[in-house]
Length: 331
Image (cartoon, rainbow, N blue to C red; front, side, top):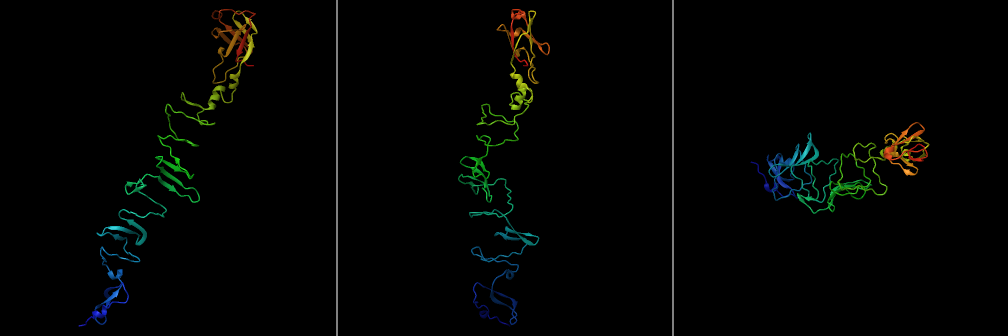
C-alpha cells in the first residue's frame, strides 16, 4: 500500500497567506490527492460556500459575480443588494432591497434624470425629526450667471423666489400684504376688494384696460367712453356743443306773448340730451324770466321764437320790451 509523507507534503511554504488544501489531481506515485499550500478561488469552492465567521473580516481586491442576476444577501438569505442584468449581461444598475442610509456629508447624483416617487420631499430633517429652523429650498445652478432658487425664508415665515436677480422676492399670499412692482395680473375672474380698501397710485400712474362700453351700473370706464359721452362720439363736435353760449337780442314782439330772434338753435350730438329751454337764459328789460313760463321754438332755419305764458309769468310783452337770450345758439 502506498503511503503519504505528511511531513514532506505539508511543509510550510515560503510565501505567506496561503491555505492547505488537496491537489486538483491525484499523484502519479500515490494515486491519491496530495495536500498542498495554495490560494483560495471560487474555482476551489465549486458550488460550495465560504464561511469566515461573524467576527472575521474578508479583504479582497475585487468581487466577481456570475449569477444573472447576482445578489448580496443578508444572514438569513434574503436579497439585500441586487446587481441587475440586461439579458445575461450585468447592466451596471444596482437595486437596494430596503432603505439606503448615507452617513456622509454629501450624496452626489451624477444622473440625467432624478425621479422620486414620494410626493413630499423632506428638507432640513434628520430622519423624521425636524432640525432647527433655517432658510431651505431648491437652487438651480446657471453656469456663468446668477443662480436661481425657490426658498422658504424662515425669518419671514413665507416662500420666496430668486429669479436669478441675486435677491429674494416674496411670493404673494392670500392673507399677506405685499407691494407689487411692475407686475401684470392676468386671467382673473370676478374679484372683490374689501369695503374699506383703497387703490392708490403714485406719480402719474393710471388704470388702463377699462371697458370702452361698460354694461354694469357703478362700474369704472375708460376716458374714451367719457369723451364719447361728452362729444357724442370720439370724432364728433360734442365738446364744441357744450362750449356754445351765444347772446341774441329779440328782433320783434308779436302780440303779447311771442318774441322773435334771428338765430338758429344748436343741435345736441347723438347720445346727448336734446336742446331745450333749460339750455337758455332770458332777460326782459334786464330782469330774469322764469323758465316755468317759457317755451322755445325753432320756427325756421333763421327764425327763433320765445313764447311766454302770460298768466304764469304775470305780465304781457310790449313792442318796446328788450329781450336778451343767452344759450346754445349757433354763432
